[in-house]
Image 1 (cartoon, helix red, strand yellow):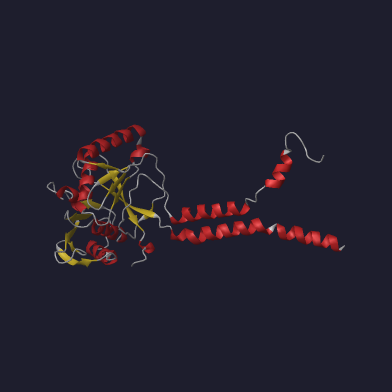
Image 2 (image 1 turned 90 degrees about the vertical axis):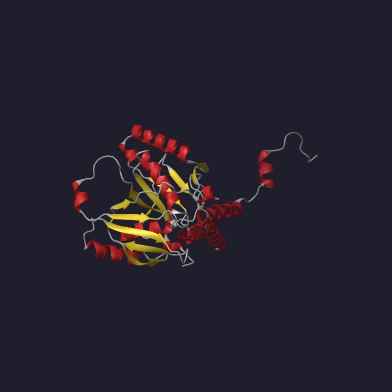
Length: 154
Length: 157
């Protein structure tokens, strides 16, 4: 007679089958924080390079929407947003960037184009990019560097 | 009376769990944070080829900083200031170079420095030279003309 018929009471089910999620949430947060701190945030505009060290450099923490980031790999390949660029496509892109900057106003054109070149790339490859930038009338550049105080193999 | 005491104790101890969790999370965050190396940048302006150079630039004497590859060792480059060899540089030779540039300018930090590097020099030496200029307080850097016959390494393979 004690057996109940019909739909089960939801309050009873939650009491009986409830899980203690506290420790799982703790572990999840620990993992999130660990990966946030150890790995860099994925940024498709930045290729994996070994940047040269510089003492007199400033932290690049400025978020500039639409900023041109040019990656120059060790063998001289030029990449933007993970795609390789040859001379013709570079010229076209820089021209478009310049035109866009002109339309956007002085505040945008004063922002430097970021050149991220591998420390072992030949300077000629960097000069090639600089020449195309000059041709497109883009004068303000900044070179990405790494902080030498973080080098453990000094 | 004893029952009330035990109830108070139970309530007091059970509140610490989440606080300890948060403290540990913060502790781990701040322990790991210094290991994340920030990316830095060093700014420069490219030469504007349009228009005549200003009178000021014509009067001031440029310091020419040449960087040539060392034929004996790929790990080194030969730095020359106004035609005189100032030594071979490793990664951290900028301070010495900055001192030379400073003395060469005679304290006039507005003296332009013209960096002329061979196209096959590793880029780190050119950036070292730029860094040295900034360390010497001489940010007016001019870039040498490129070699039109240069082809990047991946094109030569």
